[in-house]
Length: 231
Image (tube, rainbow, N blue to C red; front, side):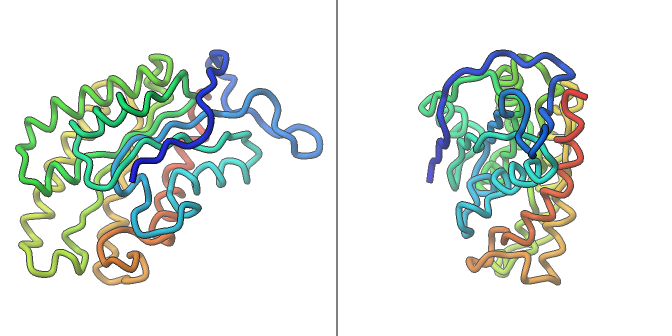
């Protein structure tokens, strides 16, 4: 499922230090609301959970709870997308920047399909450059999210779990390296995903994708980075 939520009107460029707009008297946010663009695959679109439980939506809610004015997230994501398919999806969706915050989480389907990790590096780097472009060419406003380890899930029960974990680690090294190379924030949610081996409540009913509970754990990590953006 591809979702492109909220309006595509262009907001005036927000200077560094102006993010995030805090609540004024009566709790009303001051200034234009923060615009968030989330790019990804099934994890970003929240396969297996209600739309209100997608992690970009939970992140926006957590920011609002802390007095930050945030518009509904723009989400460009679809279950099964690789880096190449996300690039095509962005072309088709046509999100209009600039955005105050952009997140990128992609790569699990490249690993699942057996694509080489070095080829993934080129595709991921190109997507990350596009993400930075959507953030008005400001890498400080971009957050890269690691790839979860689906090897611990019941879905992987008949597969080589150790190989999956090793490959996920290799892809995440590329993700972290490309983020560091561009000065982009990196949030590692993979350790939380691996807790699902012993905590079934962290998985949705399909036995593969995260539940709201796991996404809430991710948001705790993301929130610390999001609140620092533009500081």
